[in-house]
Image 1 (spheres, helix red, strand yellow):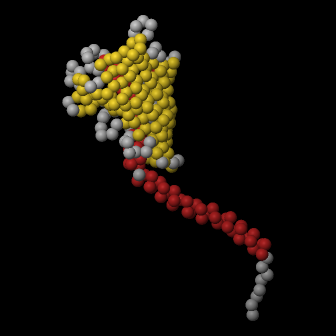
Image 2 (tube, helix red, strand yellow; image 1 turned 180 degrees about the vertical axis):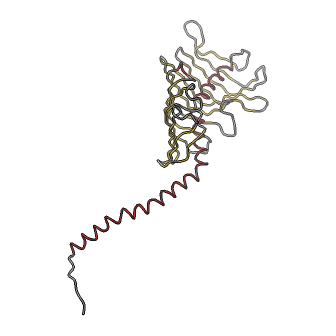
Image 3 (cartoon, helix red, strand yellow; image 1 turned 90 degrees about the vertical axis):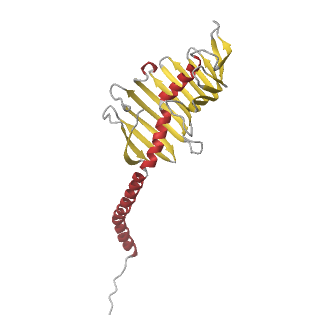
Amino acid sequence: MSLKVPFDEAAGYDILSSEMIRTLPVLLLIACDPISQIAAETLYADSAADSAMVEQALDAVRPGPILALTDRIAALTALGGACPRVDVLEQDAEGEPVREVWSGGCSTADGAQIEGFVEVHSTERGQWMAGEALSVSRDGGLELYFDGAIETVEQDDLLLIEAAATWCSPEAPCGTEDLTVDLSYSIYPAAGYPDVYDITVSGITIGAATETPITVEGAWSINAEACATEPTNGAFALQRGERHDLGMDGALSCDDCAVWTVQGVDAPPYCGIDL
């Protein structure tokens, strides 16, 4: 003999739905936790490779080497002599040169070999330099290379820098691959640089000709007296595939380390900012 219990189909579905609602969050929590853990473990395992890319981006956006490069190029004619050859293209009302071309293919009195050329346009507000394979070598070693353009303009106490060039210098040592950048900077107040100022930067950088560009953007504050090893506050982001974000808080913890996230996932702190 069997006992049949009437089945209320609608009620049955209500019971099943209620049980599913109570059960699914638990299943999701169980499922997501290992996935999150695996993602974090994978991220930490790849942090050495990631940190190399972050270091490359930080090296590219520091304003000091770019400004030092313009000073070094300007200094090529400071000692006089016949190398590089200087051709004046334009003068101001007082007869002072405002646009010149400095050409290489010669050796300086102290033994440096200069090749290529650079056109320099100077105004009361700034300077524009455009070089074509300009290089300075000494004893067979490359000391400086510049191909591209850099413009610096000062408006009141705001310094604007536009750099689209492939270059290397003693501040960014020449190697097998030169640094290529297309970056825009603003620095305020210009009179406070390099000790106390705010800076913004955006653009792209390429560490080697075969690499995909790294997109960069950031804004931070420097106060060398408050913290000499990192910005007092600010943020820097870079992306080549995955997005990396650095948060800097030297005013609170001057330890040369930044909070580091990759695709929104926490990574170990990134140390060695030195911006």
